Structures are given as structure tokens and as C-alpha cells.
Length: 161
Image (cartoon, rainbow, N blue to C red; front, side):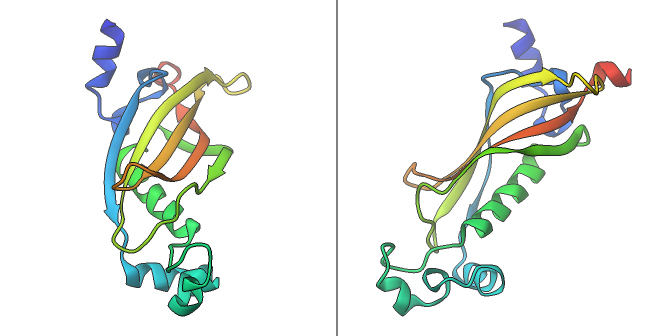
């Protein structure tokens, strides 16, 4: 559609609520998992044996060290902030899904894919829209390593004008 062609040329960070279309998807950058960063994050925030002790991790279902899911989530948030969330973003009301379907290992390349699932204007605050998105961190083999489905609060251009 003509509307789709118009908004698809606008970088995500420059979009208002009206510019996002249900069904659109974006690939927003990649990160390579670094063993030292994985260890440092897990040691500080998530010191489970399969994150910080290679010998102990070998005896778990993972067979080797894996990244903390919260580390993966932090990297996802960085990619989302760098490539998707601009000045119209007002945060999030929460997430209906948070999954880690595949373990993340040092050397993995994770790429963020965002899809617009639904949108609606807020009933109580007509100056904002609520956009449900799917965020997937996909590894180099095409496996989903992490998936979240947050509802983002995005300012409406029409309400500002």
C-alpha cells in the first residue's frame, strides 16, 4: 500500500505511533557474544554454575558455559535502543512473554528482529499509542535465543501537532 511505502522509508528511531504498521518487521543489528563479558556479567548478576564455572557447566544439560538470559536481554535492549527507540518512545507497560528457547554461548552472533504485532491508541491518554512488538534475538544458526513481547508506549504525532 502507499501508506506502507511512505512509512517504510522512515527510520524506526524517527517514527511516531502513526508511522508503525502492524506486520512490519525490522532487523536491527547484531552482537557477538564475548566470553569475558559473559563471565563478568554472570559473576556480578547471575552467578549460577552454568554461567561461571566451565567444569560445573560441563555436567549440566548445556554441556558448557552459557550466557545469562539477563545478559542476552541487556544486549537486546541496547540493540533496541540503538535501532528502534527514538524520541517518541515513552517506555513500556510490560511484557506478555519472556522466553529463552536456545542457550547462548561465547562466539554466538545474535541479531535482533522486531515485528509490530498490534497497536491501539490509549483510551486514558489519547496523546499516546500502545504498540505490541515481538523482539527476537536470533543466533547465527537461525535459532531464537530470546523472545520478548513488550507493549511499547509511543507518542502520537497527531496529538503533538
